[in-house]
Length: 261
Image 1: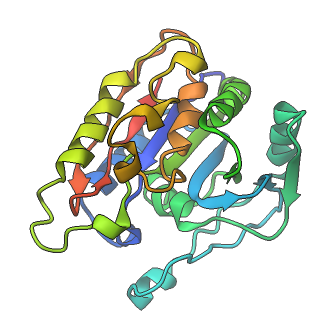
Image 2: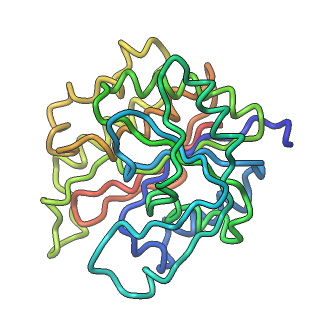
């Protein structure tokens, strides 16, 4: 087991096609996997497991979920056969108490998790456990869960959250896709400027993100934004925070990634 505090990552995952493509986002994910301390296990938090209540994958051999449609068969043929870790799942359950966490035996890895991990760790030889996002809870609650999970980082567990801080599929630009909407740029800049905030959750601009005038357009639903709060909650006081890569795709999807530590 590594004695190094593991980084915590938020990766803007964007289109599932990134799994098949070679671009500056996927190259950054590959670089992170090659250069960061190797974890003994990974706790993934994906926008695509949005639930009522909280669950954690607790099986030994999670399945690869292709939770999308209309893409090439080559994407559906991809498997990410990383082992699970019932032991880590139980540790997550214990850390999050008194929150009731269901030990799930059905879900597996959705493309929000395996889509980025397949680039970071293509050998799929690091155990992965995925935590769901309780869609009934407010932003501050998710930030608090990140705080509870922070101790895992000192036990060789890397937290990898995956979503997009701007995510409005209804407003995608199919023509002139290189030009971002002003509201998307405004909200993305707001996130960038407030990543380093240190203070109570009640005062954190990124926890209270819905107060931003463009928040509703940037995130008509919050599931792609909320994973960011898990790694912000897991950040130690004055710990380094950086943006390994960023960009805006199709006018309305932010590909910003954030690294803690």
